[in-house]
Length: 503
Image 1 (tube, rainbow, N blue to C red):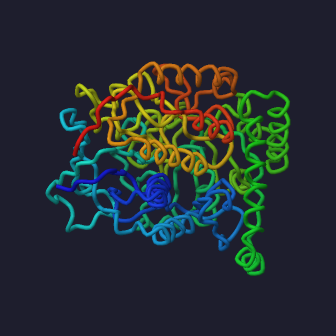
Image 2 (cartoon, rainbow, N blue to C red):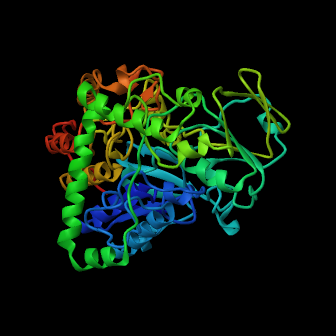
Image 3 (spheres, helix red, strand yellow):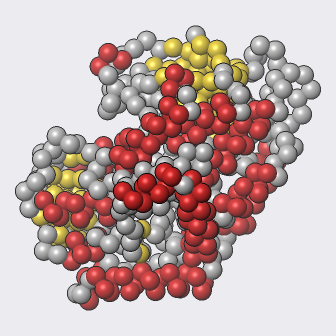
């Protein structure tokens, strides 16, 4: 058994950011549990061809660790993973990270006022060393538990009749099978979201043919961006002020972009015009343009960035099927319109379990109620971070803590600061969120979200929980507004606890 003040689950941006914030605040008694064999989170798991960030690289990093060496405006996935490895070393937290260690369950021990966390090997998850598979479970006892598990970690596999009969390579985009040689192969891709628009142009260059199944088209705007030259990187290294100024400019651009992603009609119309012009420039065929034009409001779904997707789809290398994949009959894919398409390999770019977080089933709070049960009508939390009925628990990148207009790392930094501040004022007591504080915050979110395109834009998106119809993933405001809201959390969100719990 291991006894610590804080156990952090997950070693992606959220987990590393929290560990760094705790250490900088002088709180050294923590451990980070990571089920995979290395750190990196989504940038470790996603290794598909063309994987890159769609947030400017100099905004997609920790403020305390600017990186003058980014290769370009938008960093590639491997670069971001390497960046996180460097941050782990720079912050001196590598010795606190237990790799290949999955949280199997976490239970609040009311009698002792701490969390009991059962851990074990990752059960054969890709990247788990063979020596660790079947390893005996351990227990960690922690005063506080931080769930930094990420919101896009478990691939969503669609229920398609006969999918299991497909004879060729078949995998999700977030579990790319690099042993599958797709060069010269006929490849089917299901989905036209953020991953697919990066994958399709890459496969179009090498595959014999790509058949793309599009259920709903996306609004796509120009990506732009340049590679940074050696001179650029040398200037960034020599002048921290230049990097700081660039980050400030990118931050301001992101905050301004919120208007077009929310409820500002003029801003949305202007942005939509950019997207329509981009499509018209890159796709000459009117019928194909119509098939690629969304029938919902700009901003309702995630707005995508690409300069290569439309030309790839418009080329002879790609066939667009504007129907969902309904069935698989051996190596033949059958669309809902009955059309049949023979392929050699199948890639599912079908997203993730986002509104129903898998880790929630593993966490039991007071009275044995699971976090999944508490969230049966959609994720909720006060300050997007602490949850009623789950003492001394913090959730990062969970309820209403993501963004549709800027860098999610900015939100993680604000949440990490809140966690550190709350723990500093804990003074040994159990922190129980007042249920009314969580309800009022949830109502506050609902009021702010009501007029946004995510709620009114006429689409079905993964930001809204279909069980309640509430916006549960995104913060319906700017980063500045989130920072101000957390700053107003003065401790009154917690129930009085007259006597400290002694260890």
